[in-house]
Image 1 (cartoon, helix red, strand yellow):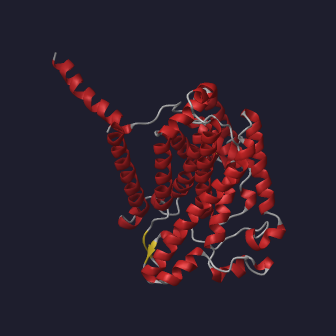
Image 2: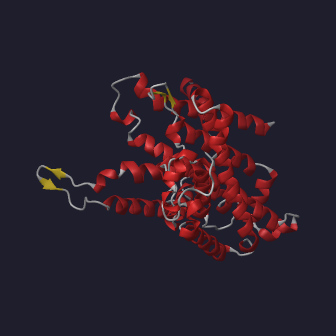
Image 3: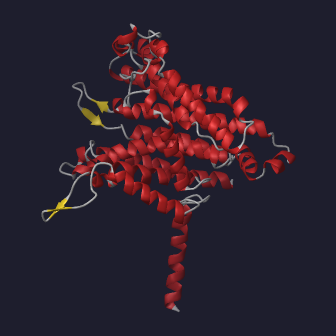
Length: 403
């Protein structure tokens, strides 16, 4: 019963957050004349979308690295699998010839959205239902493909430990990136060219017959999907399987002595983490509106790993908080450092293109040096308990004042 009572406030908090995102995204239409930051094209919504996607990938990596103690660097590879699976399955048949023009069309003539379109129709409510169902199935399929490949490579690599496992998974991701750019696979992956034309976050906006946007949902959708996935990961962590993962992380010999199958639970953690990384890859493709293998480099994996370290290895809420801070700093708050600035006719030194990343790197070094366990360590952010403590502290303070 205690777990249920703790879960309900978290669920209410997530629902309130999603409602706030919808209101924030549409507030410029409800209240004209607001500052530019509230406009749909402002950096705020770009940061929110990317952070929602990256937070899911960071939490999935934390499940493996932080809660199971397996040092894997294959996250970008599994994101690549998810992105391409989603893109290939959802490109409309009418656009396949245009997208795959170098290869005379795609090996798959139809798409999931087209299949549902034949059932529910392609216009009005039927078209919206077809697109939503098709996209959801494609996102789940993206996770399943990533999980399947994780199972295949997990059989040999999970017998490795520490740095050897990291090197093996990093090599797998790089091999995948090279294979997906192979021209002989062009009818499926479009070779080294990008796949585009599939449904993105903006396609979930509610429009009228003339195409005018009535309700914007392009930020709400990544928040909704990421929230559901992160909530599932949290439930897994608090289950008996999650406790087995933690025991393997703390002491493998003791865990095996207690009857825990090391290989089985390592494989389970690896596959589940890869599944959600694949889902994150599909969301990333929707965010950038294309799928191209050269985007999923090892730098992306290091970026996600850095977010996990900054937030705290073994803290889900830490990974989420660190993601939003990292993306906001790198994509928005420090952008002014990349442009020249003159004050009273004098040019401010050092400010030029690329200086933002120098300052950003210094800030990260300071955080890592002075917060060795990250922002949250292995703790979780419990807003409800914090509010209760504050509320209980106020009557106590009043009693002290009366005395």
